[in-house]
Every structure is written in structure tokens, then in C-alpha cells.
Image 1 (tube, one colour):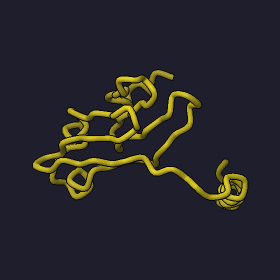
Image 2 (spheres, rainbow, N blue to C red):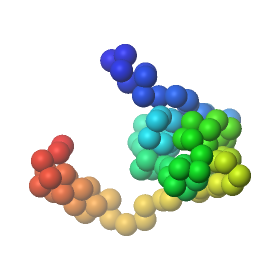
Image 3 (cartoon, rainbow, N blue to C red):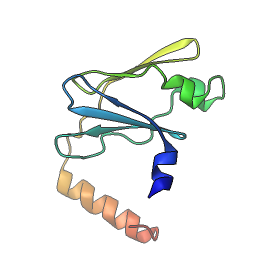
Length: 107
């Protein structure tokens, strides 16, 4: 269990405490604290992805708005990411994810 804490370098919460950005060595993930669901894949700013800035530096001054938008400075660039709401059929999408996950040997 202690190894999980070593992978996390920072947690940023919105002022209304609705959204939580968890930052690790691979990037950040946004979580909705109302239901505990993860709202993003691993977020990596382009400057960190192409090696122009260190991941830790990019999330050092991250800010999460009360609507779940993420704002940060990475190297010489500023980034803004709004949360993307899924508007499709949730049941079909879940079945597709579970089917693909089982086919790949993961669960």
C-alpha cells in the first residue's frame, strides 16, 4: 500500500471540493468526488509529452475550477482543459468497455 503513495506527487482540489486532480509521475487524472468516478484518462500536457518540461513542473501550479476545468503552466505554455461529458448510451458503452477489457485479458 505504501507504494501507491510514492507514485502520487500532488493532489489539487477545486474550491467547491467537487473535483480532485491527482498527479503522479505519468500525468494527472481528474476525479468527481460526488460519485468517485474518474473523469479523464491520464492527462499529459504537450510540453511534458515532448520532453520540453518535467511532468512535476507542469503540475506544480495546477488549478481545478468548480466546473472541473484544469488550468496549468507547463514550461513556457499555459494549458486549459474542460471536462468532456459523455452523451451517448452509457449501457452500450459499458458493455463495449467490458467486452474489450475481457478480450485483452484485463479486468
